[in-house]
Length: 258
Ligand SMILES: NC(=O)c1ccc[n+]([C@@H]2O[C@H](COP(=O)([O-])OP(=O)(O)OC[C@H]3O[C@@H](n4cnc5c(N)ncnc54)[C@H](OP(=O)(O)O)[C@@H]3O)[C@@H](O)[C@H]2O)c1
Image (cartoon, rainbow, N blue to C red; front, side, top):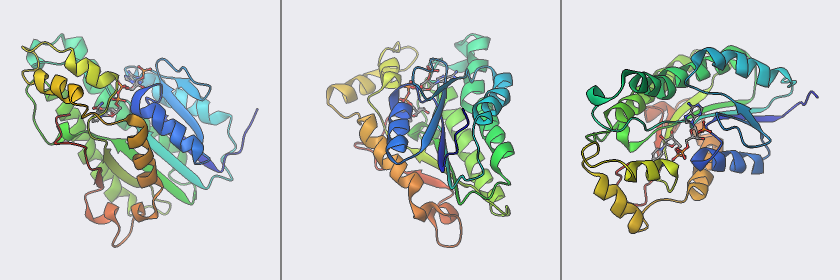
């Protein structure tokens, strides 16, 4: 059945963790949400493996095919899906694991936005926002997280350039990178399970959890969604997107190790 949403959100990696909480918050704000993940466990889920870039465009086309988008006022796109594996020096990793990491966190993240832009760049939607979930690892090097840090840093620069490109568009997106700080999710459990020879600072991550210094993803999602819906994210003179390199860094609960 065709539906005609006024507010639509497209979220990658909304099956669990931060992405799931972002979806719940957006639904509370009146958005029709579609989340894209491999597990796809929710009524609003669409199955997509970002390790298979050839599936991205056809999957998005199908997901949008059932919608009448003519009355759309608000479009929020959140690139949240992320992979940590493989942890450890990249030269020691199986080549296929390395390539999958680069694909999921960088290549497919960009291709997902490209597919969204192909659909929506010329649509006169009142408010269009792309929020990419980044990490402090984009700026702080950690031995053993070179791939993760590299892909997060690469995506931050992609978002900055995208924000510049949007300036000349008749119906621009506001593009920002959002750093959520260290979260109590599966991803942190995966970090804590790393071998010390792969991740020499693993004890710091273990202590962080023991000391209760991981943030609740529901609380962080609330702040992130408020930032995405805030009028101060509008492009144009004087806005944060204009002057801060299109990057919004939320205050972490403690000095960041993520
Ligand atoms: N946790 C932290 O401390 C922390 C800190 C800074 C930044 N971040 C960032 O925040 C975001 C969310 O992290 P999280 O902690 O919520 O992680 P998480 O609990 O591990 O969840 C990751 C999400 O990404 C999806 N995903 C992973 N690989 C995928 C693939 N090949 N195709 C489609 N979806 C895929 C997963 O869905 P499926 O498994 O169902 O596919 C899941 O929904 C990530 O970008 C992460 O880098 C996290």
